[in-house]
Amino acid sequence: MKKNQILAGMFLAGITLGACTDDYTDWANPQSNSPEDAAAKYEINYAAGTDAAIVMDDVYAKYADDAEGLKVDSVVIASLSSSNANIASIAFKSVNVNGVAIDAAFKDGKVKVNTLELDLAVRKAFNSRAHVERTLDVNVDAAAKLTTGEAVSTSGTAQVKLTPVTTPAISEKGYCMMGDFQKWNANEPIVMEKIGDGLYKAVVTTTAEKSWFKFYRAYDTTNPSWDDDINPGVLGTFEDGDVATENFLTWVGDPSCPSPQAPAISGINDFIVTLDVVNMSFKVAIKTIDLFMTGSNYGWGDTWKQLTPIHSAEGEFWTIVYLEAGEQIKFAPQAGWGNDFGGEATINDEAGAGLTADGTNLLAKNAGWYLLHVVNTTDRIVNVLAPNIYLIGGTAADGKWEVADVNKFTVPTGKDGEFVSPAFGAADEVRMCVNFGGYDWWKTEFIVLDGKIVYRGSGNDQERVKVAAGQKAYLNFTDGIGSFKIIFFLNKNKALFLAMENTRKRAFMFSLSNHLQILI
View 1 (cartoon, rainbow, N blue to C red):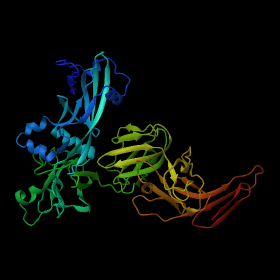
View 2 (tube, rainbow, N blue to C red):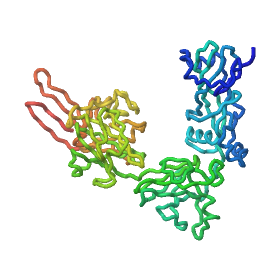
View 3 (cartoon, one colour):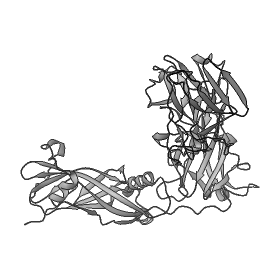
View 4 (spheres, rainbow, N blue to C red):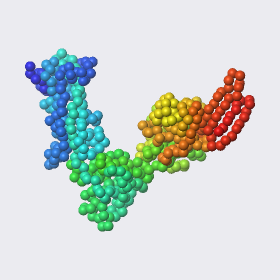
Protein backbone atom coordinates (compact mmCIF):
# COMPACT_ATOMS: atom_id res chain seq x y z
CA MET A 1 0.00 0.00 0.00
CA LYS A 2 1.33 3.37 -0.98
CA LYS A 3 1.68 5.66 2.03
CA ASN A 4 -0.69 8.60 1.91
CA GLN A 5 0.63 12.12 2.24
CA ILE A 6 -1.80 14.50 3.88
CA LEU A 7 -1.28 18.07 2.88
CA ALA A 8 -3.02 20.67 5.07
CA GLY A 9 -4.59 22.75 2.28
CA MET A 10 -4.86 20.24 -0.44
CA PHE A 11 -2.73 17.23 -0.96
CA LEU A 12 -2.52 13.63 -2.06
CA ALA A 13 -3.62 10.80 0.19
CA GLY A 14 -3.52 7.25 -1.01
CA ILE A 15 -3.65 8.23 -4.72
CA THR A 16 -2.35 11.17 -6.65
CA LEU A 17 -5.09 13.75 -7.36
CA GLY A 18 -2.97 16.45 -8.92
CA ALA A 19 -4.01 20.02 -8.19
CA CYS A 20 -7.19 19.23 -6.33
CA THR A 21 -8.86 22.41 -5.05
CA ASP A 22 -12.03 20.95 -3.51
CA ASP A 23 -13.30 22.92 -0.56
CA TYR A 24 -14.60 20.65 2.18
CA THR A 25 -17.86 22.63 2.26
CA ASP A 26 -18.55 21.49 -1.30
CA TRP A 27 -18.36 17.83 -0.38
CA ALA A 28 -21.11 15.68 0.94
CA ASN A 29 -22.25 16.40 4.47
CA PRO A 30 -19.63 15.22 6.95
CA GLN A 31 -20.30 12.01 8.83
CA SER A 32 -21.59 12.24 12.37
CA ASN A 33 -18.29 11.20 13.89
CA SER A 34 -16.61 13.83 16.02
CA PRO A 35 -13.49 15.32 14.35
CA GLU A 36 -11.31 13.61 16.96
CA ASP A 37 -12.99 10.23 16.40
CA ALA A 38 -12.63 10.62 12.66
CA ALA A 39 -8.92 11.37 12.97
CA ALA A 40 -8.44 8.17 14.96
CA LYS A 41 -10.68 6.02 12.75
CA TYR A 42 -8.98 7.05 9.53
CA GLU A 43 -5.50 7.07 11.04
CA ILE A 44 -4.88 10.77 10.48
CA ASN A 45 -1.88 11.75 12.53
CA TYR A 46 -1.31 15.25 13.88
CA ALA A 47 2.19 15.89 15.16
CA ALA A 48 4.61 18.70 15.91
CA GLY A 49 6.44 20.01 12.91
CA THR A 50 10.17 20.16 12.36
CA ASP A 51 10.18 23.42 14.31
CA ALA A 52 8.89 21.80 17.50
CA ALA A 53 11.17 23.89 19.73
CA ILE A 54 11.05 27.43 18.39
CA VAL A 55 13.46 30.08 19.69
CA MET A 56 12.25 33.35 18.24
CA ASP A 57 15.65 35.01 18.65
CA ASP A 58 17.05 32.40 16.24
CA VAL A 59 14.15 32.74 13.80
CA TYR A 60 14.52 36.51 13.59
CA ALA A 61 18.31 36.18 13.27
CA LYS A 62 17.80 33.84 10.31
CA TYR A 63 15.83 36.53 8.52
CA ALA A 64 17.86 39.50 9.75
CA ASP A 65 18.68 40.52 6.20
CA ASP A 66 15.41 39.34 4.71
CA ALA A 67 12.53 41.46 5.96
CA GLU A 68 10.16 39.89 3.47
CA GLY A 69 11.14 36.43 4.64
CA LEU A 70 9.53 37.11 8.01
CA LYS A 71 6.23 37.72 6.26
CA VAL A 72 6.12 34.39 4.48
CA ASP A 73 5.16 31.07 5.97
CA SER A 74 8.51 30.28 7.50
CA VAL A 75 7.87 28.29 10.68
CA VAL A 76 6.76 24.66 10.54
CA ILE A 77 4.59 24.09 13.62
CA ALA A 78 2.69 20.90 12.72
CA SER A 79 2.59 17.98 10.31
CA LEU A 80 -0.21 15.73 9.11
CA SER A 81 0.08 12.22 7.72
CA SER A 82 -1.98 9.12 7.09
CA SER A 83 -1.63 5.64 5.57
CA ASN A 84 -5.35 4.94 5.28
CA ALA A 85 -6.32 3.89 1.74
CA ASN A 86 -9.90 5.08 2.27
CA ILE A 87 -8.82 8.74 2.13
CA ALA A 88 -8.76 10.34 -1.30
CA SER A 89 -7.76 13.84 -0.27
CA ILE A 90 -7.85 16.31 2.63
CA ALA A 91 -8.83 19.95 2.58
CA PHE A 92 -7.50 22.26 5.27
CA LYS A 93 -9.90 24.41 7.26
CA SER A 94 -8.11 26.38 10.01
CA VAL A 95 -5.40 26.39 12.62
CA ASN A 96 -5.13 28.18 15.97
CA VAL A 97 -2.42 28.49 18.58
CA ASN A 98 -3.74 28.33 22.18
CA GLY A 99 -7.11 29.50 20.93
CA VAL A 100 -5.80 32.36 18.75
CA ALA A 101 -6.52 31.90 15.05
CA ILE A 102 -3.56 32.25 12.70
CA ASP A 103 -3.15 32.06 8.92
CA ALA A 104 -1.17 29.13 7.59
CA ALA A 105 0.13 27.55 4.41
CA PHE A 106 0.37 23.82 3.73
CA LYS A 107 2.84 21.93 1.65
CA ASP A 108 4.15 18.38 1.75
CA GLY A 109 2.07 17.61 4.82
CA LYS A 110 3.54 20.54 6.78
CA VAL A 111 1.65 23.36 8.49
CA LYS A 112 3.64 26.55 8.03
CA VAL A 113 2.86 29.87 9.65
CA ASN A 114 4.00 33.45 9.25
CA THR A 115 6.73 34.32 11.78
CA LEU A 116 5.28 37.71 12.66
CA GLU A 117 1.75 36.30 13.00
CA LEU A 118 2.98 33.49 15.23
CA ASP A 119 4.79 36.01 17.43
CA LEU A 120 1.59 38.07 17.73
CA ALA A 121 -0.57 35.00 18.44
CA VAL A 122 1.69 33.97 21.35
CA ARG A 123 1.54 37.48 22.82
CA LYS A 124 -2.25 37.42 22.72
CA ALA A 125 -2.53 33.86 24.05
CA PHE A 126 -0.34 34.55 27.10
CA ASN A 127 -0.94 38.32 27.36
CA SER A 128 2.80 38.71 27.61
CA ARG A 129 6.04 39.24 25.69
CA ALA A 130 8.19 37.81 28.49
CA HIS A 131 11.24 35.79 27.43
CA VAL A 132 9.84 32.57 28.91
CA GLU A 133 9.40 29.22 27.17
CA ARG A 134 5.73 28.64 26.32
CA THR A 135 3.90 25.44 25.52
CA LEU A 136 1.71 25.94 22.47
CA ASP A 137 -1.30 23.80 21.62
CA VAL A 138 -1.53 23.86 17.83
CA ASN A 139 -5.09 22.90 16.86
CA VAL A 140 -5.70 21.99 13.22
CA ASP A 141 -9.16 21.53 11.68
CA ALA A 142 -9.52 19.82 8.30
CA ALA A 143 -11.87 17.61 6.31
CA ALA A 144 -11.02 14.31 4.65
CA LYS A 145 -12.68 13.23 1.41
CA LEU A 146 -13.08 9.48 1.31
CA THR A 147 -12.82 7.32 -1.78
CA THR A 148 -16.59 6.77 -1.43
CA GLY A 149 -17.17 10.48 -1.97
CA GLU A 150 -18.16 11.11 1.64
CA ALA A 151 -16.58 13.90 3.68
CA VAL A 152 -15.34 13.49 7.22
CA SER A 153 -14.47 16.39 9.53
CA THR A 154 -11.18 15.84 11.29
CA SER A 155 -9.06 17.71 13.81
CA GLY A 156 -6.02 17.17 15.95
CA THR A 157 -3.62 18.90 18.30
CA ALA A 158 0.15 19.02 18.37
CA GLN A 159 2.30 20.61 21.06
CA VAL A 160 5.15 22.97 20.29
CA LYS A 161 7.58 24.82 22.53
CA LEU A 162 8.28 28.48 21.79
CA THR A 163 10.50 31.03 23.53
CA PRO A 164 9.73 34.69 22.66
CA VAL A 165 12.52 37.14 21.85
CA THR A 166 14.76 38.42 24.63
CA THR A 167 13.34 41.54 26.28
CA PRO A 168 15.44 44.42 27.68
CA ALA A 169 16.75 44.08 31.22
CA ILE A 170 14.67 45.92 33.81
CA SER A 171 16.20 49.31 34.57
CA GLU A 172 17.47 49.59 38.14
CA LYS A 173 16.89 53.35 37.97
CA GLY A 174 13.22 52.97 37.07
CA TYR A 175 11.15 54.49 34.28
CA CYS A 176 9.60 57.76 33.21
CA MET A 177 7.20 59.16 30.61
CA MET A 178 7.19 62.03 28.16
CA GLY A 179 4.43 63.19 25.89
CA ASP A 180 2.22 65.96 24.62
CA PHE A 181 0.87 66.46 28.16
CA GLN A 182 4.29 67.71 29.36
CA LYS A 183 5.45 69.12 25.96
CA TRP A 184 8.14 66.43 25.57
CA ASN A 185 10.33 68.25 28.06
CA ALA A 186 13.38 66.01 28.52
CA ASN A 187 14.47 67.97 31.60
CA GLU A 188 11.20 67.30 33.44
CA PRO A 189 9.91 63.83 32.52
CA ILE A 190 7.07 62.28 34.51
CA VAL A 191 8.73 59.88 36.94
CA MET A 192 6.80 56.64 37.35
CA GLU A 193 6.23 55.15 40.80
CA LYS A 194 7.32 51.54 41.32
CA ILE A 195 4.30 49.56 42.57
CA GLY A 196 5.54 45.99 42.18
CA ASP A 197 8.05 43.70 40.50
CA GLY A 198 8.52 45.31 37.11
CA LEU A 199 5.36 47.41 37.60
CA TYR A 200 5.31 51.21 37.47
CA LYS A 201 2.51 53.76 37.62
CA ALA A 202 2.06 57.46 36.82
CA VAL A 203 -0.84 59.91 36.64
CA VAL A 204 -0.98 62.20 33.63
CA THR A 205 -3.38 65.02 32.78
CA THR A 206 -4.25 65.45 29.13
CA THR A 207 -5.35 68.74 27.55
CA ALA A 208 -6.08 67.53 24.01
CA GLU A 209 -8.44 64.95 22.53
CA LYS A 210 -5.42 62.88 21.47
CA SER A 211 -2.10 62.97 23.31
CA TRP A 212 1.02 61.09 22.07
CA PHE A 213 3.55 59.72 24.58
CA LYS A 214 6.37 57.19 25.12
CA PHE A 215 8.08 55.40 28.01
CA TYR A 216 11.81 55.71 28.79
CA ARG A 217 14.39 54.20 31.08
CA ALA A 218 15.14 56.73 33.82
CA TYR A 219 18.09 58.96 32.95
CA ASP A 220 20.09 61.91 34.29
CA THR A 221 17.94 64.97 33.57
CA THR A 222 20.72 67.49 34.18
CA ASN A 223 21.77 67.83 30.55
CA PRO A 224 20.44 64.78 28.73
CA SER A 225 21.22 63.89 25.13
CA TRP A 226 18.34 62.46 23.11
CA ASP A 227 20.68 60.29 21.07
CA ASP A 228 22.89 59.05 23.90
CA ASP A 229 20.76 59.11 27.06
CA ILE A 230 17.07 59.08 26.15
CA ASN A 231 16.22 57.30 22.89
CA PRO A 232 18.31 54.16 23.56
CA GLY A 233 15.92 53.34 26.41
CA VAL A 234 12.64 54.21 24.69
CA LEU A 235 9.58 51.92 24.80
CA GLY A 236 6.69 52.40 22.41
CA THR A 237 4.08 50.63 20.31
CA PHE A 238 4.10 48.95 16.91
CA GLU A 239 1.77 51.57 15.38
CA ASP A 240 2.06 55.34 15.73
CA GLY A 241 -0.90 56.96 17.44
CA ASP A 242 -2.39 53.67 18.66
CA VAL A 243 -5.08 54.58 21.23
CA ALA A 244 -5.65 51.07 22.63
CA THR A 245 -6.03 51.22 26.41
CA GLU A 246 -4.11 47.93 26.78
CA ASN A 247 -1.20 47.26 24.49
CA PHE A 248 2.13 45.55 24.03
CA LEU A 249 5.42 47.44 23.91
CA THR A 250 8.39 47.34 21.61
CA TRP A 251 11.93 48.60 22.16
CA VAL A 252 15.10 49.60 20.37
CA GLY A 253 16.50 46.43 18.85
CA ASP A 254 13.20 44.51 18.89
CA PRO A 255 13.51 42.30 15.79
CA SER A 256 9.73 42.31 15.27
CA CYS A 257 9.53 46.09 14.91
CA PRO A 258 11.86 48.55 13.12
CA SER A 259 11.44 51.30 15.74
CA PRO A 260 9.17 52.04 18.73
CA GLN A 261 6.25 54.29 17.81
CA ALA A 262 4.31 56.66 20.06
CA PRO A 263 0.99 55.41 21.47
CA ALA A 264 -1.69 57.97 22.29
CA ILE A 265 -4.27 58.63 24.98
CA SER A 266 -7.75 59.51 23.77
CA GLY A 267 -9.73 62.15 25.67
CA ILE A 268 -9.21 65.03 28.10
CA ASN A 269 -8.97 63.83 31.69
CA ASP A 270 -6.68 62.56 34.43
CA PHE A 271 -5.34 59.10 33.49
CA ILE A 272 -3.54 56.37 35.41
CA VAL A 273 -0.87 54.76 33.20
CA THR A 274 0.56 51.42 34.33
CA LEU A 275 3.78 50.03 32.82
CA ASP A 276 4.68 46.32 33.02
CA VAL A 277 8.28 45.76 31.88
CA VAL A 278 8.16 42.03 32.72
CA ASN A 279 5.43 41.33 30.18
CA MET A 280 6.27 44.39 28.07
CA SER A 281 2.80 45.89 28.14
CA PHE A 282 0.93 48.88 29.53
CA LYS A 283 -2.58 50.01 30.47
CA VAL A 284 -4.32 53.39 30.44
CA ALA A 285 -7.39 54.11 32.58
CA ILE A 286 -9.26 57.25 33.58
CA LYS A 287 -8.47 58.25 37.14
CA THR A 288 -11.92 58.17 38.64
CA ILE A 289 -12.57 58.68 42.33
CA ASP A 290 -16.35 59.08 42.36
CA LEU A 291 -19.36 58.39 40.20
CA PHE A 292 -22.88 59.78 40.50
CA MET A 293 -26.21 59.12 38.80
CA THR A 294 -29.05 61.50 37.97
CA GLY A 295 -31.94 61.48 35.56
CA SER A 296 -35.64 62.06 35.01
CA ASN A 297 -36.57 60.84 38.52
CA TYR A 298 -33.82 62.96 40.10
CA GLY A 299 -34.77 66.32 38.60
CA TRP A 300 -32.03 66.07 35.98
CA GLY A 301 -29.28 67.23 38.29
CA ASP A 302 -31.31 68.44 41.27
CA THR A 303 -30.29 65.21 43.02
CA TRP A 304 -27.24 63.03 42.37
CA LYS A 305 -27.15 59.45 43.66
CA GLN A 306 -23.62 58.34 44.54
CA LEU A 307 -22.46 54.92 43.37
CA THR A 308 -20.10 52.75 45.41
CA PRO A 309 -16.56 52.08 44.15
CA ILE A 310 -15.44 48.46 43.82
CA HIS A 311 -12.43 47.90 46.04
CA SER A 312 -9.15 47.72 44.07
CA ALA A 313 -10.93 48.18 40.72
CA GLU A 314 -10.07 51.64 39.46
CA GLY A 315 -12.99 53.34 37.71
CA GLU A 316 -15.60 50.66 38.52
CA PHE A 317 -18.72 51.28 40.61
CA TRP A 318 -22.01 49.65 41.61
CA THR A 319 -25.40 50.46 43.07
CA ILE A 320 -28.74 48.80 43.85
CA VAL A 321 -31.50 50.92 42.37
CA TYR A 322 -35.18 50.75 41.43
CA LEU A 323 -35.80 51.89 37.87
CA GLU A 324 -39.28 52.81 36.74
CA ALA A 325 -40.58 52.10 33.25
CA GLY A 326 -39.60 55.02 31.04
CA GLU A 327 -37.05 56.38 33.51
CA GLN A 328 -33.95 58.05 32.00
CA ILE A 329 -30.54 58.17 33.69
CA LYS A 330 -27.00 59.49 33.18
CA PHE A 331 -23.70 59.31 35.06
CA ALA A 332 -20.98 61.84 35.94
CA PRO A 333 -17.71 61.73 37.95
CA GLN A 334 -19.00 64.46 40.26
CA ALA A 335 -22.35 65.56 41.69
CA GLY A 336 -22.87 67.98 38.83
CA TRP A 337 -22.72 68.22 35.06
CA GLY A 338 -19.43 67.79 33.20
CA ASN A 339 -17.85 64.74 31.53
CA ASP A 340 -21.22 63.03 31.97
CA PHE A 341 -22.30 60.03 29.91
CA GLY A 342 -25.23 57.73 29.27
CA GLY A 343 -26.28 56.67 25.79
CA GLU A 344 -22.66 56.70 24.65
CA ALA A 345 -21.81 53.79 26.98
CA THR A 346 -21.71 50.13 26.03
CA ILE A 347 -24.79 48.47 27.54
CA ASN A 348 -24.93 44.87 28.75
CA ASP A 349 -28.43 44.20 30.06
CA GLU A 350 -28.49 40.77 31.70
CA ALA A 351 -31.48 41.45 33.97
CA GLY A 352 -34.25 42.40 31.56
CA ALA A 353 -34.45 46.11 32.35
CA GLY A 354 -34.66 46.88 28.64
CA LEU A 355 -31.98 49.53 29.16
CA THR A 356 -31.18 51.21 25.85
CA ALA A 357 -29.53 54.36 24.57
CA ASP A 358 -31.91 57.29 24.15
CA GLY A 359 -29.72 59.95 22.60
CA THR A 360 -27.11 60.78 25.24
CA ASN A 361 -29.30 59.28 27.99
CA LEU A 362 -30.15 55.74 29.05
CA LEU A 363 -33.80 54.65 29.04
CA ALA A 364 -35.24 51.80 31.13
CA LYS A 365 -38.25 50.05 29.61
CA ASN A 366 -39.10 47.63 32.42
CA ALA A 367 -39.62 48.64 36.04
CA GLY A 368 -37.84 46.76 38.81
CA TRP A 369 -34.85 46.46 41.10
CA TYR A 370 -31.47 46.16 39.40
CA LEU A 371 -27.79 46.10 40.24
CA LEU A 372 -25.90 48.56 38.04
CA HIS A 373 -22.19 47.90 37.52
CA VAL A 374 -20.73 50.95 35.80
CA VAL A 375 -17.22 51.19 34.35
CA ASN A 376 -15.90 54.71 33.83
CA THR A 377 -12.42 54.38 32.40
CA THR A 378 -11.36 55.00 28.83
CA ASP A 379 -14.17 52.53 28.22
CA ARG A 380 -17.63 53.37 29.52
CA ILE A 381 -19.76 50.34 30.24
CA VAL A 382 -23.11 49.89 32.01
CA ASN A 383 -23.86 46.33 33.10
CA VAL A 384 -27.43 45.70 34.29
CA LEU A 385 -27.52 42.70 36.63
CA ALA A 386 -29.93 40.94 38.97
CA PRO A 387 -29.96 42.64 42.40
CA ASN A 388 -28.57 39.64 44.27
CA ILE A 389 -27.49 40.28 47.87
CA TYR A 390 -25.98 37.64 50.15
CA LEU A 391 -25.10 36.88 53.74
CA ILE A 392 -21.61 35.48 54.07
CA GLY A 393 -19.49 34.09 56.88
CA GLY A 394 -20.56 33.20 60.40
CA THR A 395 -24.18 34.37 60.18
CA ALA A 396 -24.84 32.65 56.84
CA ALA A 397 -27.02 29.55 56.87
CA ASP A 398 -24.06 27.37 55.91
CA GLY A 399 -21.51 29.43 57.85
CA LYS A 400 -19.20 29.55 54.82
CA TRP A 401 -17.22 32.43 53.39
CA GLU A 402 -18.55 31.73 49.93
CA VAL A 403 -21.47 33.22 48.05
CA ALA A 404 -24.35 30.71 47.87
CA ASP A 405 -28.03 30.86 46.87
CA VAL A 406 -29.08 29.58 50.30
CA ASN A 407 -27.88 32.92 51.72
CA LYS A 408 -29.57 35.15 49.15
CA PHE A 409 -31.91 38.00 50.14
CA THR A 410 -35.47 38.17 48.84
CA VAL A 411 -36.11 41.06 46.47
CA PRO A 412 -39.10 43.39 47.04
CA THR A 413 -41.60 44.10 44.28
CA GLY A 414 -41.99 47.82 44.92
CA LYS A 415 -39.68 50.81 45.13
CA ASP A 416 -40.18 51.25 48.88
CA GLY A 417 -39.97 47.58 49.81
CA GLU A 418 -37.22 45.88 51.80
CA PHE A 419 -34.67 43.28 50.82
CA VAL A 420 -34.85 40.54 53.48
CA SER A 421 -32.11 38.07 54.34
CA PRO A 422 -32.52 34.45 55.45
CA ALA A 423 -32.51 34.05 59.22
CA PHE A 424 -29.01 34.33 60.69
CA GLY A 425 -27.63 30.86 61.29
CA ALA A 426 -25.63 31.85 64.36
CA ALA A 427 -24.85 34.75 66.66
CA ASP A 428 -21.88 36.38 64.99
CA GLU A 429 -20.65 39.46 63.16
CA VAL A 430 -22.87 40.01 60.17
CA ARG A 431 -21.30 40.36 56.69
CA MET A 432 -23.29 41.24 53.57
CA CYS A 433 -22.30 41.72 49.94
CA VAL A 434 -23.37 41.76 46.33
CA ASN A 435 -21.64 39.40 43.94
CA PHE A 436 -20.77 39.90 40.27
CA GLY A 437 -17.92 40.08 37.81
CA GLY A 438 -15.73 37.58 39.62
CA TYR A 439 -14.79 40.07 42.36
CA ASP A 440 -14.03 38.78 45.86
CA TRP A 441 -17.01 39.31 48.15
CA TRP A 442 -15.21 41.80 50.40
CA LYS A 443 -14.70 44.17 47.47
CA THR A 444 -18.47 44.75 47.32
CA GLU A 445 -19.53 44.36 50.97
CA PHE A 446 -21.55 46.69 53.20
CA ILE A 447 -23.05 46.87 56.71
CA VAL A 448 -25.85 48.57 58.63
CA LEU A 449 -24.60 51.13 61.19
CA ASP A 450 -26.89 53.42 63.19
CA GLY A 451 -29.78 52.35 61.00
CA LYS A 452 -28.04 53.34 57.75
CA ILE A 453 -26.60 51.18 54.98
CA VAL A 454 -22.85 51.90 54.92
CA TYR A 455 -20.66 50.65 52.07
CA ARG A 456 -17.04 49.56 52.31
CA GLY A 457 -16.20 50.85 48.83
CA SER A 458 -12.47 51.39 48.45
CA GLY A 459 -11.94 51.72 52.23
CA ASN A 460 -10.58 49.38 54.89
CA ASP A 461 -12.46 46.76 56.87
CA GLN A 462 -15.63 48.23 58.38
CA GLU A 463 -16.81 48.44 61.98
CA ARG A 464 -18.33 45.14 62.92
CA VAL A 465 -21.88 44.51 64.20
CA LYS A 466 -22.81 41.35 66.10
CA VAL A 467 -26.32 39.98 65.62
CA ALA A 468 -28.37 37.22 67.20
CA ALA A 469 -29.22 33.86 65.69
CA GLY A 470 -32.66 33.90 64.09
CA GLN A 471 -32.60 37.60 63.27
CA LYS A 472 -32.86 38.82 59.69
CA ALA A 473 -31.45 41.80 57.83
CA TYR A 474 -33.96 44.27 56.36
CA LEU A 475 -32.60 46.72 53.77
CA ASN A 476 -34.36 49.65 52.13
CA PHE A 477 -32.10 50.86 49.33
CA THR A 478 -34.45 53.66 48.29
CA ASP A 479 -34.03 55.39 51.65
CA GLY A 480 -30.58 53.93 52.41
CA ILE A 481 -31.65 52.45 55.75
CA GLY A 482 -31.57 49.00 57.32
CA SER A 483 -32.04 46.95 60.47
CA PHE A 484 -31.60 43.50 62.01
CA LYS A 485 -34.75 41.98 63.56
CA ILE A 486 -36.59 38.92 64.83
CA ILE A 487 -40.32 39.05 64.14
CA PHE A 488 -43.00 36.78 65.61
CA PHE A 489 -46.25 37.31 63.74
CA LEU A 490 -49.79 37.45 65.15
CA ASN A 491 -51.38 34.12 65.82
CA LYS A 492 -54.96 33.21 64.94
CA ASN A 493 -56.16 34.74 68.22
CA LYS A 494 -54.45 38.00 67.33
CA ALA A 495 -51.94 37.63 70.11
CA LEU A 496 -49.23 40.28 70.25
CA PHE A 497 -46.19 39.74 68.00
CA LEU A 498 -42.66 40.58 68.96
CA ALA A 499 -40.00 42.29 66.90
CA MET A 500 -36.45 42.42 68.23
CA GLU A 501 -34.16 44.87 66.46
CA ASN A 502 -30.45 45.79 66.72
CA THR A 503 -29.84 49.54 66.88
CA ARG A 504 -27.40 51.86 68.59
CA LYS A 505 -30.06 53.15 70.97
CA ARG A 506 -32.43 51.48 73.45
CA ALA A 507 -36.12 52.18 73.18
CA PHE A 508 -39.44 50.51 73.88
CA MET A 509 -42.58 50.90 71.81
CA PHE A 510 -46.03 49.52 72.60
CA SER A 511 -49.10 49.29 70.38
CA LEU A 512 -51.72 46.93 71.75
CA SER A 513 -53.82 47.06 68.59
CA ASN A 514 -51.07 45.75 66.38
CA HIS A 515 -47.88 44.63 68.07
CA LEU A 516 -45.23 45.00 70.70
CA GLN A 517 -41.83 46.05 69.35
CA ILE A 518 -38.73 45.85 71.51
CA LEU A 519 -35.70 47.70 70.19
CA ILE A 520 -32.41 46.68 71.80
